[in-house]
Image (cartoon, rainbow over the protein chains, first blue to last red):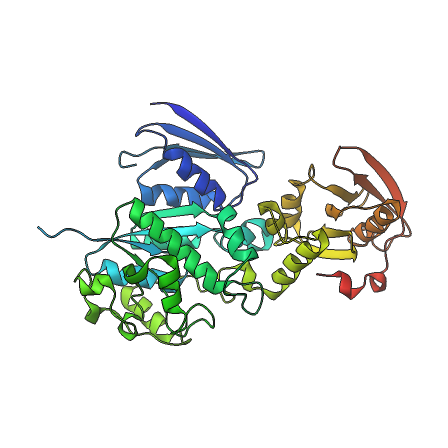
Amino acid sequence: MSLHTLDARRLLCPLPVIRVQDCVKGLSAGDTLEVTCTDPGVRYDIPSWCRINGHHVLETREHEGEIIIIIQVGSNS
Amino acid sequence: MTHERKAVALISGGLDSMLAAKVVMDQGVHVEGINFFTGFCVEGHTHAIRKHDTDKPKRNNALWVAEQLGIKLHIIDVIEEYKQVVLNPKHGYGANLNPCLDCKGFMVGKAHDWMQQHDFDFIITGEVVGQRPMSQRRDTMPVVARESGAGERLLRPLCAKLLPETLPEQEGWVRREQLLSFNGRTRKPQIALAAQFGFADFAQPAGGCCFLTNEQYSVKLSDLWQSRGKRDYELDDIMLLKVGRHLRPRPHFKLIIPREEGESRYLEGYRRQFTYLQAFAQNGPIVLLDGTADEGDLLLAARITARYCQGRDAAEVSVRITTTDGAARIVAVVPLPTDEIHSEWLL
C-alpha cells in the first residue's frame, strides 16, 4: 500500500474528478491518494465519485484556500 | 444461465438521460454511465467560479444522477478531440455556434468505442423525437446512429416505440413494450415518469448543458477567432469566455473584468499569462488584458480599470499595470466616464 499525491489546483470540476479517476486507474486496492484542489466543487464531486466507484474518502481538510482530500482506493477498482 | 447484458448510458446530468438509464436498468440490464467533458459544459464550472451561487450545492449533476441510479460513471476528457466538432461541423451550426448534430454523433461514437473496449452490448441515450430542433428530429436521429458507428446498438428508451426496432429489442435484451413513446418538446411525460420513479431535485437547465447554445457566449467565441485571425482555441480560452465582462475597446486587445469576488479569484490564477491591471489604492477587481497593447492602449485600459474600482468617482486613480514578465508600474489616470464606454465594446 503506497501513498500518492495529485495536484489538481486551478482545475475546475469536473477536471479534478477526471484527474483523480485517471490516477486511481493506476493504483492498487488500499493505496491512498492525496489530492490538492482549489475548486470548492470538489468537496461534493470527489466524495460522490468515490461513493459510486467504491473508494473511500479518509480525510478532507482546507488550508489557505486549498482543499486536500485523501482517498483510499477500494477493492473493486 | 442467461448472460447479463450490459449497456453504457450517456449521462448528461439532466432528467432525460437519467430516466432512459432507469427504464433499461429496470429490465435487468447492467448499466454504467459515461459523461464527456468538452470544455463547453455548463455543468460545474460556472457554479464553481461564481460566488453568488453559494446557496446552491456545487455538485456535478452527472455524478449526482449516477449516485441516484446507483451506477458507475466514467467521465471522459474529450477537450482536444472535440475541437474538430466545434471548428468544422459537417452538419453546420444551430442558432448559435452549437454543432448539435455533429456533437451527438461524436458522443455516441465515443460511447460506441468505449462499449467495444469494455465488452458492453449497447448504448442508451435520453433522446426524444422532436425535442431538439437539430439533433433530435425524426430525420436526424438515424444520422446519429449511422455516423457514430453505433447503428442498431443505439437505443433511445424514451422514444423507442416511435423508432425502428434496435438490436437490443430484436435480441430480447430489452422488451420493446416496456419502452416509451415520448415525442416533442413537452416535458410533462418526463416529469410524470420522474415522479413515478421517485426522482426529485433533478436538474433541468433552461439553456441546455452547453455554452455553445448561448448567444452571448457564441459572440465572444466568434470575437476570439476574429481577433486572432484563425479559428482555434485552447481550454483556457474557452474557460475565460465563461468569466466576467469582456470589453474590446480596440481590435487588437480586450479586457476581462470580473463581476464579483468568485470571478476575481478565478482570474487571479491567470496573472502570469496575461498583462493585468488593478487599482492600487482603492478596492477594485483584477482586469486581464488579452492581446497586444501600446502605451496609449495601456492608459485606456487603466482608465477602464479605474471605472470599475471603488474610486470610480475620484478625480484620479492609481492603477498598477503588471506585464507577463512580472514587471509592474503605477499610472495615475482619470476613470473613464460611463458614457465613454461604448456599448459596442461589450461582447
